[in-house]
Length: 255
Image (cartoon, rainbow, N blue to C red; front, side, top):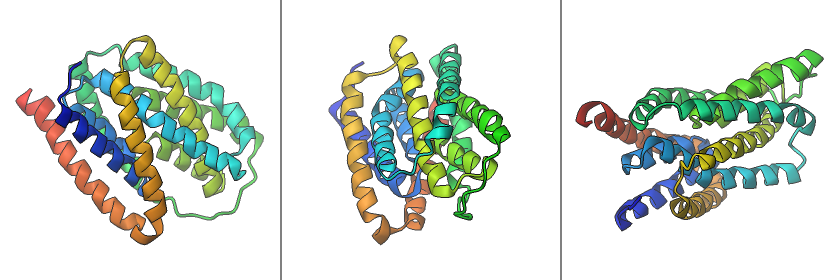
């Protein structure tokens, strides 16, 4: 589809902001997806393009965690197949709907992603003993359910993974965050494959958006200590409010 140069500039700026915010306080996808919809991109294509643009950043973060030995591969290898299945089912389910309906579904799901991002994650750093039930039953179930959510919608999935594996499975917070990146990368790639097979993405647009997203993430991670997560949360809140109101106007009032 044809987009004006100013629309592309707007999207590049928003994906830079999304990467910047996500690297410090999380929730970048909550900015990225609505921005694509505001720009007039059909809902399914917007989700597919976002997956293509955001997945490289998730993979790069995963590599950094893995290099520092923070990923719990035992749980990861058990959960990966369920992430793939859940994500593929979620994306295929989403594509059943028309673009107008998908846009309205996204508006209703945005608060879910916001809640996931703003749930406090401050807790003990002690690694609990993970029982066989949690390892072979609870963890796969978590991966299946959140994988479905990530394939169907996406924003907030990383936070849901962290919350579930920290509070339910009992993983230490940093390791839960690192392992969540593994699952997030897997569900992202799985959903992206389904979107690609169905032609629901814009390749030429996803490339500059991915570069902007990674650039924002790199700069944000360097300034994290100086700026602080609390201030970034305010930026995220203001951005979400503006985008949310715009989308309600677009899909429920003007449309």
